Amino acid sequence: MTYWIPSTPLNALISGPSAGGPWEEQDGAPRSISEGWFDVVCPKLERRIINTRDVKPEVNWADGKIIFEKWRNLLLEAPERCIEIVAASKEEDPYPETFDIKFWSGPRSVSLWDEFKVSPVSRLLGTSPTVQSAVDANLHLFFTDSHRRRHLPPSSTTKASLSQAGKESDTADPFDHVLSIHVRRGDFKEACLEHAAENSTFYNWNLLSFLPDKFSPPPAAGNRILPKGKNTPENEAIFLERCLPSAASITRKVRAAKEAYLQNANANAASSGTGPAESSSRLNRLTRSKTHTQSQRSLDVLYIMSNDRTAWLDDLKDSLRRDGWAHIVTSRDLKFTAEQKDVGVAIDMDIGRRSAVFVGNGWSSFTSNVVHRRLVDGKEPISIRFW
Image 1 (cartoon, rainbow, N blue to C red):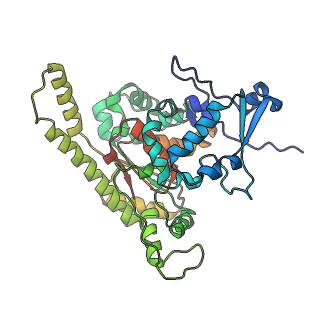
Image 2 (spheres, rainbow, N blue to C red):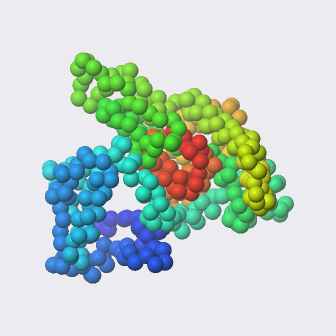
Image 3 (cartoon, rainbow, N blue to C red):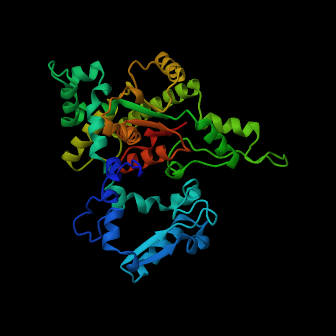
């Protein structure tokens, strides 16, 4: 009997060239294709096979730019029309990817940021239609009564009308008022303790120097002999405080992130009136409009993206309500079709991307992906925080 193993198509998760979408005009780069079509246009006898074991050892612990140039030159200088990169065996390399987890879980990737953020792969990365449809269908959850009064006619009370209003009017976009937090639980304590055992720092783009809330791993144990896979209890506590924060710690951080974001708007508004007079009246009008928008910032909706399904999440919501959050939405409040349910993580990521403020976990690749999209969208660094 043959069993079909379900899989999620890449273009259900993302859109853009990486998922087979077009490049920009005048860009002659070939389109991404499926593995099945690659087998058709590049028969095995016509391929050059490059094994990662023949490339990685030379640059295994090098900076990101050096690794990137190594692979770039190898591919550009190859005369063959078809090239296939194959992974070394697990015995040869436990992490055989071209850019593996050891690379992304440390500062060596950061040197690629300036070039990557403006590349077509980065700029043209978009939200998939499946994800967009799910966000639109749940948009009504993020409107408060005050949003409806300000932006919608009295008859606009259905989910469909609220969703359509959010799409048609930038001023009615509820995410302008949303602070989203990424709170991973479940098995994450074990993951946090693994990070502590390795004394690891944040993941990938979470390490960008201009972002707040940096983390420096504590000093090693010195002369103390520890069991394999363990750190000192003191160091483990430091990691758990940032990696698996308590409800009280989350509440404090959310309050601080909100205050910093609103204070930054006030500072921008105050400073915009100083300096030399503008020669262009149009620029003056634009500046006044921007200042007004900044000074009118508000955050009155909290979105909790979490895999927790226990009473702990209810306790967290109670703590946040006591701290002034009257309108709280969680991942489990969203309603999905069967198709949308399969891309729930990508839906949470897109809400995190669009929110006014996002607080994430510095060791998380999920958080790093949200950070990338927010920065490409032009979000301020002060709106990107970590536990």
